[in-house]
Length: 162
Image (cartoon, rainbow, N blue to C red; front, side, top):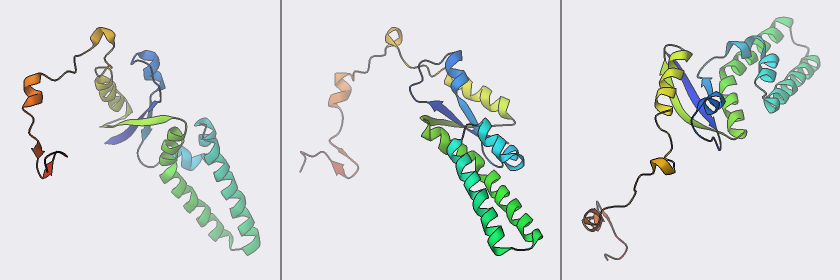
């Protein structure tokens, strides 16, 4: 079972094909490309601040290695452990980057694979079109319902009922 979060750009106009192409799906969990080719993955995803942090941590690790001069096997273990940690958090960093770029998380979808998740999301997303002037719905409350509203709900009275 795969889990994806769905992110829409702010100010998305309409719900057509052009808008659907701008919706981003981000998988939950481990990211293999981020583990195997982290800098290339970061450039591909346009995560420039994260790339700078990744490169700065690499420079800091190299400086620490030269200063401490540990065994070669320890250096390899530490580098692999840091790459594992990065790959576990890569998709969360991608969500952070999307939020920073003006996207908002609109849904969480599950399915056997990405295609099934996309299908289930867009099946409901396209139905939930915002009401335009041609599809305007009356939002007025009938007077019989408005007068039948009790002044106390639970233990919270209206301000004037003291």
